[in-house]
Length: 298
Image 1: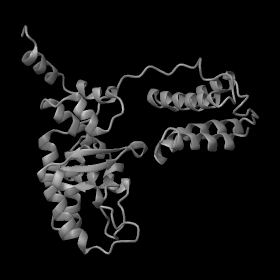
Image 2 (image 1 turned 180 degrees about the horizontal axis):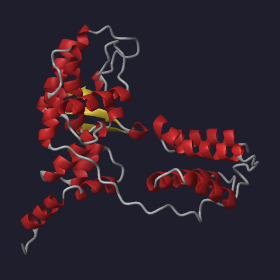
Image 3 (image 1 turned 180 degrees about the vertical axis):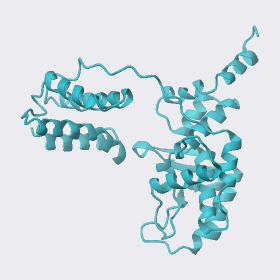
C-alpha cells in the first residue's frame, strides 16, 4: 500500500465513519503529510505497512525541535490515530507509535472577556456603515449563543426559530443542536436582515445564508477574525482575542451566574463533559462562592 492510497482511505474513514468536518480531516492528515515529506527528504522507502518505530522516532525527534509541547502532543496523537486505523483495517499488526509518549502539557485555560469589555467592543462598532448592523448582530450571536466561528458563518435564515426562542446550529461532524436565543439577540438580527441584508444583491448559493459580505456571499472565517481584531485595536484592548473568545466568555459568564454545567455542555455542543469542565478552572472565586452557598457546614 502506498502512502497516498492510505491517506485517501483514512480521509474517507474520518468522513464516513467518524463524521468529521473537512477542517478536522485536514488537521488529522496534515501530520501524515509531514511524515511523507520526511521520508522523501531522507530517501527512505518505508510504506505505511512496514514503517517501524525507529523511523517514526527519528521523525518525531527531528520535527519536535521546532514545535512547542502542545504541537508535539498533537502531532503524536494524530499519527497514533492514523496507525491505529491501519491496525483496525488489518493492514498492520502493530502501531509503531505505541511506545512514543506525548510531552506533558498543562490544560490551557481559555481567554475570556468581562461583560463590560464585551459591551465596549459591541459599542465600538460603527453603525453608520451598512456592515455595522451586520457586525453587531454577529457579535451578539457569537456571545449570546456561544457559537464557534464556523457555526456563525454557516448559520442560515431557515435555522432561525424566533417564535420558539431557539436557533438551530450545525456543529462539528454536522451534528445539529438547538440553542436558546435572547430577545436582544433576536432584535439585532432582525434589524440586520430587514434593513441591511434585503438591500444586498445576493449571490447564487447564498440565498439562505444569514450573514453576508458586501458582495452578497457567505463571510469567511478570516473576515470575522479581522472584524474582531480591528474593534479590539480601536479600543486599545491588550488582550489577544478572537471569535472563540466570545464563546469562552459565554460559557464562563453562564457558569459564574450559576448555570448548570450539563446545560452549558449542551449549548456549546461538547460531546464530552470533560471539555466543558475547563470552565470550572477559569474563576476559582466562583467555586468558593458555590461551596459557601450550598455546603451544609458552611
